[in-house]
Image (tube, rainbow over all chains, first blue to last red; front, side):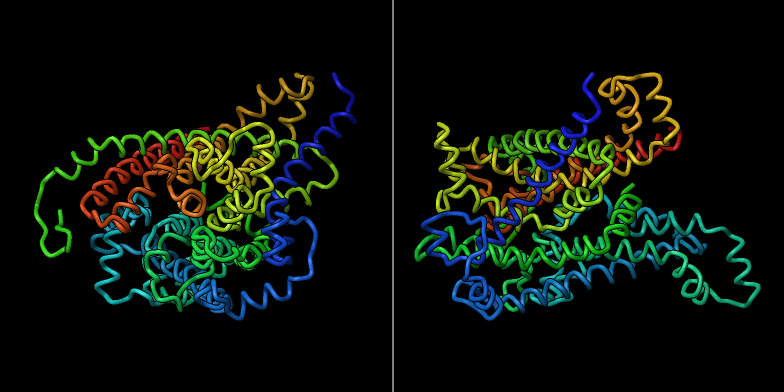
Amino acid sequence: MSKPWTRTVIRHGILIMGTLIMVLPLWIALMSSTHTPETLFKEGLQFFPGGFGWETYKAILGGNDDLSTPAWRMLWNSLVLGLGFAIGKIIISTIAAYALVYFRFPLATPLFWMIFATLLLPLEVRIIPSYEVVAQLELLNSYAGLIIPLIASATGTFFFRQFYRSVPGELMEAARMDGAGPVRFFIDILLPLSSTMLAAIFIIMFVVGWNQYLWPLLMTTDTDYYTVVIGIRQMFQTINEGGDLPQFNIAFGLTILATIPPVLVVVIFQRMFIKGLVETEK
Amino acid sequence: MEDAFGLSSEFVGLRNFTDVLEDPEYVSTVLFTLFFSALVTFFSLSLALLLAVQVNEVLTGAGVYKTFLMWAYAIAPPAAGLVGSLLFSPLMGDLYNGINALGFDFNHTRDGSDAIFVVVLISVWKQLSINFIFFLSGLQGIPASVQEAARIDCPGSIKRFWTVTFPLLAPTTFFLLVINTTYAFFETFGVIDLTTRGGPAGSTTTLVYKIYQDGFLGADLGGSAAQSVILMLFVICLTIIQFRYVDKKVHY
């Protein structure tokens, strides 16, 4: 059997390798974005900072021939999508779960199964009908059309249903004795009880919303509504079409800009994020 | 079925389905999707497990490793795809020339299996974080008393892992199998669209990518919808498996 310290060294070796693999691609992207497209074209990928970063990011944010929309506009759209998706999802799923757990009403069982059935229909399966509906409601190229179809899924509802069921019934009785109605109970007792989970789910949903790809791709033909992820796709097309000198620095820089906000959120709220992820998906 | 201008549609019963199922291209897409998800699931799970076990055992720096290993979760699949395709791109050249200098005839835009390699690599990279997070929390959920007892009974660390730790992680692993299959089916769309676009010659087209191609680029709404229904049946199977497992876990 090997000595403990050799084992420790091997462990660290494996971990450092793993960390490098996870970090290097982004590091290269960040460093390459600070070089001129000519350097990148001639010398390939860059591992150390260059002097062109300011110009790159100014061109990305302020507008550039290769980008139909300035990146600040796309970042804003992504932010709207991420926040709207997270908030909408939380509102819908908490209210629906509240109704399912605490109220007896006609058709409760069929409604439950209908909500359940949405689990079987990820957006990819229902893109064509969803697209038709949104097109006929004339919501193409609007924030509402971008966000609402994405919210329609029951994952959050199920989680909150589970959580509300674990809340002891005595609490509700006590609240009723004190004269709290259903709305009062929901807002003053249930929501504060679940605040940690609300925050955790909010973080996850924000990241998921920000990174949406297929739906915005179909939905947004008006460049004013492009999210930054769609901007990345556009950049990819421009590069592959060839023609002029490919603006690699812009492509790398845009990727970095698209990546920073969700990564920051995840790293800053790491503990909450892990808790939310592990507990909701189980 | 619709005519070319979408002016009339005709009821064709199950013909869209038989058309789809008899299409050799569709069959090869199904096979590729299964092959692809098996590869992605296997590699991302085993690498993530390896890393999670190491982080769980080291005393110093665990927090730092953890942060760096999990952050890729937040990266959008298309962003990973773009960086990946630039890294391997013949235009940029470093990795491209490097691999070719090793004697491989590598070009992911022309050769089917090279394209599969690139797509699998990026998808695994992207999925590593989430698997890592789940494995690590699974490992940390194993009670210290169990670990100690195992250490006394079974001094070899590798044997101890396979006989004690791994079976205890079985629920996590099973759950991750389902999650990863779903990921490989659906979320890799962004990766594929920004690296190979299903090509060359359809060699990296997954089921979702084909729905998108046929329905939105090829305007074959009927065929695309039929594919959606087939895909839905698959999702239903996965969900049933998943819920069965949730039931079992209660008794675990």
